[in-house]
Image (cartoon, rainbow, N blue to C red; front, top):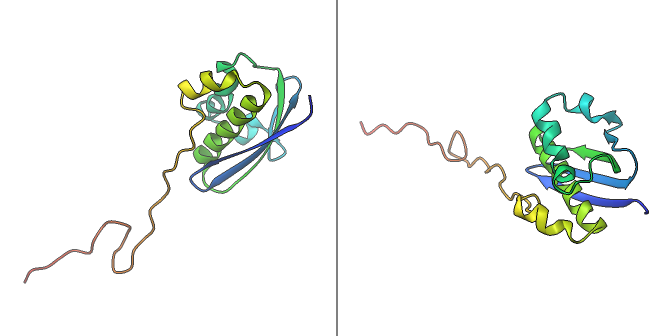
Length: 128
């Protein structure tokens, strides 16, 4: 099996992954996944596609991720891994789609408007 590359996005985070046969090592920006994401919840988000498809420890993942915060980056990596696993085996798509891992979350931060302190908040109105 050659190297399969895939892309995942969430908010302003972009993750490019390179999936290859291996022992299950996940390297994010040249660091181990446990060092880059010290929170266990974020590590479990990244490993979720492998758990659903019973491929834990079968693939090595090399990730380049930038932009956004750590949660958005973890979810971008999760989407990229799910897309790569579908490229490996098409039957994985139904399992991942049922869990909602194949859907790109479109929610973005709304822009700040002029004449307002935030996107939707208005300055205090005084009648008199």
